[in-house]
Length: 235
Image 1 (tube, rainbow, N blue to C red):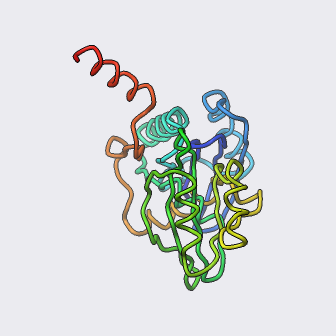
Image 2 (cartoon, rainbow, N blue to C red; image 1 turned 30 degrees about the horizontal axis):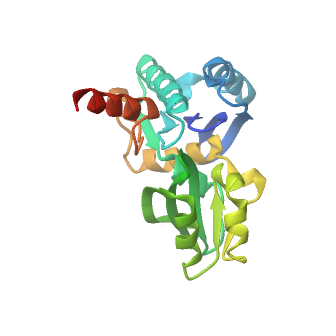
């Protein structure tokens, strides 16, 4: 059985999967209250599933990119539990989980998350024969440039992620080449993290808790501001 945690976005979520079958899932989109909600959600999840932590084979957690605060809460919680319970842990990229939660037959899926200052994190995937393949890895770019890139692909692209809501005008301007996923598929689900975590665990991708690191892609705004001020002081 795999316990999955997703806190890299405004969604605070957890799920339990056993032998590739979803047992229970809790997804709550509440903003930045993950530190208050996550542990009670985990307790509730085990009760709902009628499961015991002794049945766990591993934990899975979204590793980013995404909210720096959310990622730290999720990773700290997952790594602490894995260490305390003596279980391995699997890192699941957030954008991969987003794309996995939007299956389409032989179709293109792009995952977008806010990277601030008019930019987005973006990764491009394609479903083929029921499997998800990464076509282009995570990059940061202006939202307009990303939508233009997606519109140039040889088939219509379904876009998932919270940034979709902010850039609907850009998507509409592509005249159907780039379309927003339904609201239910826009945000990451713990079930997607759990299923991907289960697959990666079966492939031997689990590590010790101390070996797992977040996938930030960029540094935090505070770190960039501090470095800029330091350069100004030294000039």
